[in-house]
Image (cartoon, rainbow, N blue to C red; front, side, top):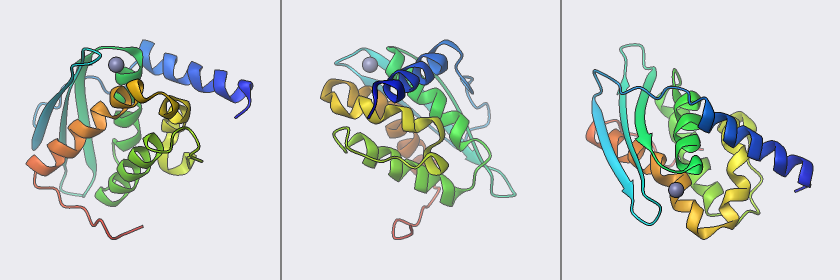
Length: 153
Ligand code: ZN
């Protein structure tokens, strides 16, 4: 990765941290999950529901480091209004990216601004920060009884 791309990605993360998208609790969430990353002190609560037309709605609130909070903002922006299949695809792609040790080639169509986290995957201590909101999402999704087809994609 060129240093230009790297600094662009850092700017994207910082922008989400400073101007978070979707960081309000979802009032009528079908499932909600509070997750804590004790090693860094990050906290996030994610709520989810799927409306009658099959669109996903995500809301969150949290506090902590720039990586964890930017990740929540990226996730919320990316998933709002998608359907369950697209959500599952994004969820899997982000988790895979975080386990790529920085060698991943993220697909912007699937991950949106989530591609900016590819460099974070090189730092084991920060991976938990980046994954925290996605772990909360998974848990909230299960609590809401939203099934995803794991064999797809
Ligand atoms: Zn953190």
